[in-house]
Amino acid sequence: MARLSLVIDASIVVKWFSSLEEANVSQAVDILDRRVKGEITLLVTNLLYYEVSNALVHKKALSNEKVQLSVASLFSLGMQTVHTDADLMVMSARLARQFSITVYDACYAALAQKYNCPLVTANPRHQMQTLGCQVIPIEEWK
Image (cartoon, rainbow, N blue to C red):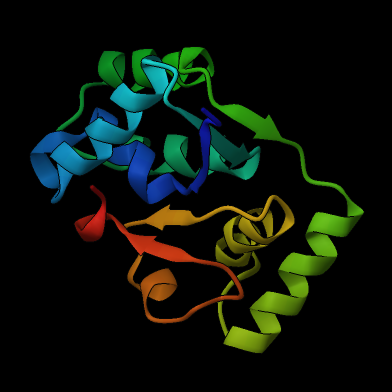
């Protein structure tokens, strides 16, 4: 059976580390659990590591030690990191203009387009538009 590939954005990964201030944590954790079981492949852009780290740094409920441990563990979660190249950046810029979103947000949709797989997100800006790829709001993850 072919493994399901998903693009996830920072809004999903933050939930893995900061469940106290987050909604839909069980759905986000299910994605990670299924990755660990080998049922799905998670594709992420290298931007995700910066965005998640930044979000965790600014969560007052997390201690400095918890933030540092969480940031370090990002690299051991088995996500397949796709490094930004000219093609991905051009796609991101096109989508950003087309949908009036940031290039940062568009980068995830561009990755989903490039690999022809769904984007799972808790980001309302992604959920309100098709963005040229299948967008699965975390609330609808099964």
